[in-house]
Length: 84
Ligand SMILES: [Zn+2]
Image (tube, rainbow, N blue to C red; front, side, top):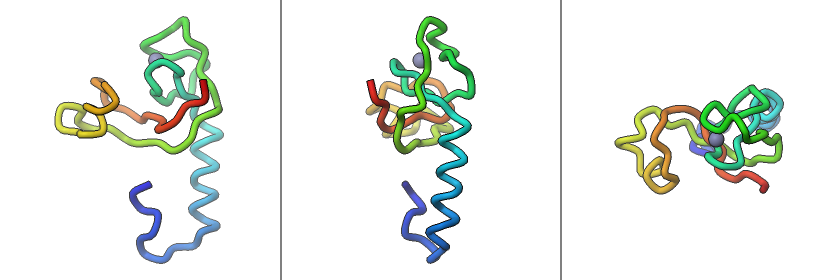
């Protein structure tokens, strides 16, 4: 999301990178955390889904407005939208 219009890079390459991320990660429906596993680390009973869109990387939840708005307290990658 952040680097969408910067540096005039090749759209094709960006699309490829996004595709790679999507194939690798799955999102928890409860906390939106991205993981490579079929279950969330925080919610072992929750089956993660491949139906998610966009993601943010939270390094310091205490200082991140996005983290506050999304009730994220752990650092990591989070999907912006997860299909329920
Ligand atoms: Zn979760």
